[in-house]
Image (tube, rainbow, N blue to C red; front, side, top):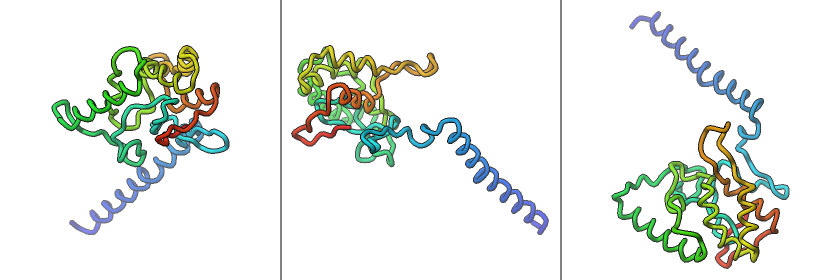
Amino acid sequence: MNAKQIVIALRMTLVTLVLTGLAYPLAITGAAQLVFPRQANGSLVPRGGRKVGSELIAQSFTNPAYLQPRPSAAGTGYDAAGSAASNLGPTSQKLRDRVAADVGRLTAENPQAPGPVPLELVTTSGSGLDPHLSPEAAAWQAPRIAAARRVDVAKIQAILARNLEGRTLGVLGEPRVNVLLANLALDGELGLAAAAPSGGGSP
């Protein structure tokens, strides 16, 4: 390889680095800040002068007065810095044991729930950070929330229905309920729930 080839290779490397490592990221970041500033900055949700979470990232809710999300295998659980699935397959005994334990716990915690435990409440998403539930999985929890807040279950169902998100652009995805936003709506309409004896959090 002669000196001319080395110079050409170095020049191409520099141009590629500038274009793909600097110009393109800056252009996309600028466009995102201009067109979708809220989403580009994490879709953070404020309440009482502080940020309580993101619409895009699930967090743990163990207080029975709140909607509870899908289980998480991200990091140590609901870890936005460690998005991951469990990678356990249907033949995994560890997965079966964990699902069986979750079914038993949810059944005990939701004695008035209609029907069996929805599958999504005992299975993790691919990211471990899915912030949504199906309308069915959200409604399944309504009797427990109503009992914890001492209100009629129809009131909880109405709040969940008002927080139902439709398909994106009318065609993409399925109807869903954002767990964080629905829990904030519960507090907004019914007041802040008392802390659970186990220390379960509120939004």
